[in-house]
Length: 59
Image (cartoon, rainbow, N blue to C red; front, side):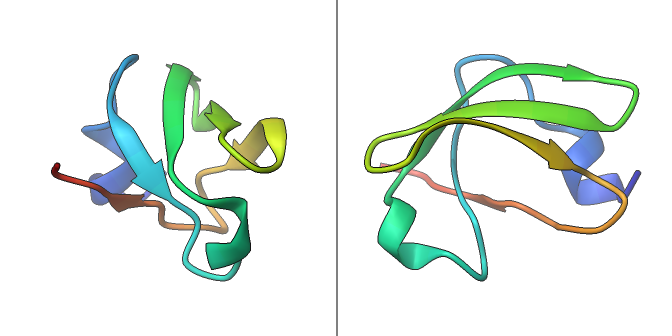
């Protein structure tokens, strides 16, 4: 898992770098490099943290 994804914790806000149309998502869990995120416009998605580096959102 990428070091950036390792810091993601439940409740943090993120964006998918290749899917900006999904909007901002809230991390639900981050277990073993599998990150479950509930995106505003896409719903719940499980991300493989070894393939995608999610972008933290600071509002």
